[in-house]
View 1 (tube, rainbow, N blue to C red):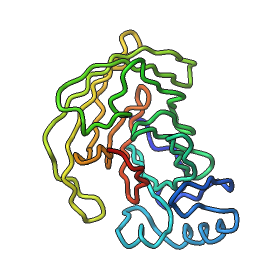
View 2 (cartoon, rainbow, N blue to C red):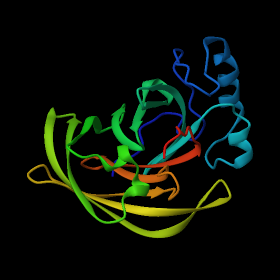
View 3 (tube, rainbow, N blue to C red):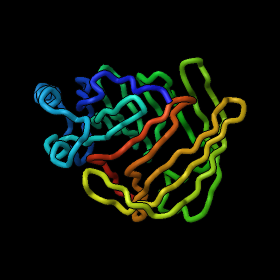
View 4 (cartoon, helix red, strand yellow):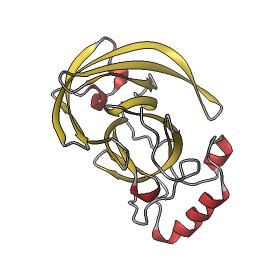
Length: 225
């Protein structure tokens, strides 16, 4: 797993100046960027706390690799696609809790799609037995596009997961993803609210040699049943 490449990874990352309003949230506007930068300069987010997260009026996502961590802010929600941004233009994009694109890493996921059924779109709380489906992945560098992968998703036990001092009772789901001939044979893990399928925590392989752990510190949760 490569090192986490984002500068300022040991503090809250500042957003790019242009941000999108999302329904039901406090959007980051051009007029508020100075206050965000001041908050970044004045706080150490190596180990986010409930108090430090609550002090900032933004949705926050912790992203970590073997080389470090960063706290990203939600800048856009468009058609269910969430854009979480950090310093210097790096970003991760989530759909239904699944990484579908990354920007600015040593190895990037340029695009991810489901070929056929998508258990994440319908909600993992409905997955009570192992399921199999196909995914299509694009990676860079190297222009490795249209990589066909077979995925096997299996529900596991309920586990206690502590986030900012609060213990959540979450069901773990293991997703084995294999792309023959592409050197990609990995297991992703998701910790899921059994009531509504919301993914609080995950460990996802975005490309060969690149793994990210995601923890929702202040989540943006769209209503679903």
